Amino acid sequence: MRQNKSDRASIGGVNVTYEVRGLNLDRLINFAKKKGFTLYDVKKYGNKRLIVSVSLKESKNFFAITKELCYNIKKVRENGVYYPLLKLYRSIGVVVGAIIITLTAVYLDGVILSVSYFGTGSIYHREVDEYLKSRGVKKYALFSDFSLSALEDEILSANDRLSFVSCKKVGSSLQVELALSKEPVQKLNSNIYSLCSDLAGVVEDIKVYRGTALVQKGQAVEKGQVLVDGYTEIKDQKVPTFVLAAVVLSCEKITEYRSNSGEDKENALIFAAEELDGATIISQSVFKRKVGEDYFYTIVTNYKKIISAG
Image (tube, rainbow, N blue to C red):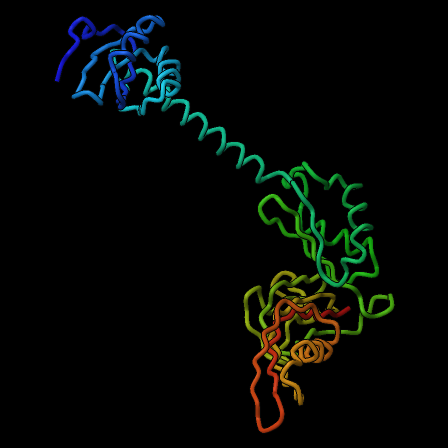
């Protein structure tokens, strides 16, 4: 090992130490000095390995010319009197960057970046979209500027071809579910005093305009169970009233389809869908088994059903 003592002196600031490998390292040292580089702590290990430091200001250029001369160079470390300050400065930059990213994410979470529509009533999404824009609900609007539940009621009132509307905030997206009314528009039916479930399922959403809900979101219900009853409590007294409400149930139906073909999956899915009478299908799974010469397809369908009264 040989040390170049004339280059051992260090100056204030920040130095970058490199390891350089290659032949004729003296040529590199002399070339760097002629180019005006100041080298510190030059240490040669044998004929092919060199440890050398340069100032942070000169480090990029030194790295570049060394690569151009076909030497293998890699950064070892940074040091110097002001290195702790540099490290702190970089850390502050990272912290500030993280704070900015966090604040931006929090802000954008409260901003509508997209509006999407789904459900059987989504064929009217253009009309609903125009209505929302007239209310100021559009891209870059703030979620805090309006009430989602009030918005649902307004959309439903503005379009008599819809039987159900649900507005949900999912991240920065406003997701609007629209259910198409199956019946012609009729006058309000004030002769219904309870809303009962016509099938088993789990309550996904519930809206009560008249009456009292007897179930809540996430609750499993049975066929025939009363979901909304025809009364309102006023000063601890039950006052009879008609029911005006809608309940969304998440349900599962198992259907069996028989065929003489082992490649009849699509027809099996269509058959199962037709039995749901236009309900919104969420997912379907098919299981096939062969019995004798026939094939039996078992279809498990998860779907949404809207039950309404009034």
